[in-house]
Amino acid sequence: MSLHLMNDDVNSFDYVIHVLCKRIPLCNSLRAEQIAMLVHKSGECHIHTGFPPEIYILYAQLQKTGLTVQLKLDKK
Image (cartoon, rainbow, N blue to C red; front, side):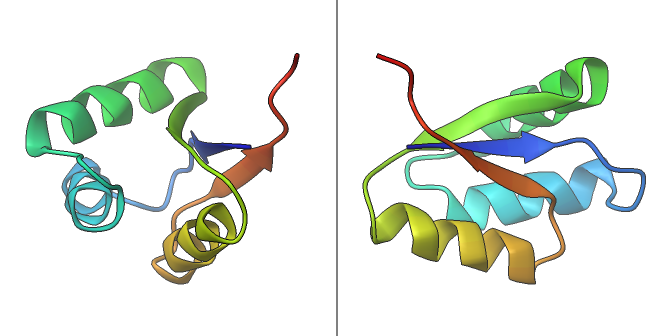
């Protein structure tokens, strides 16, 4: 499963970067900034791939922070 960050008009770039660095495994500030820019320009960005239940936990944590996230099944 893939976790995608969706664009919104609520959260600031700084807040999104902070949350991504804190919650996404192996995410540093440079990667978080790149993700934020991609989301801003294209509307969404893949941010993490994982298996249940880990991906569900991460999804719930990001939702609690106010970010708009979506789970997608990986295509084979």
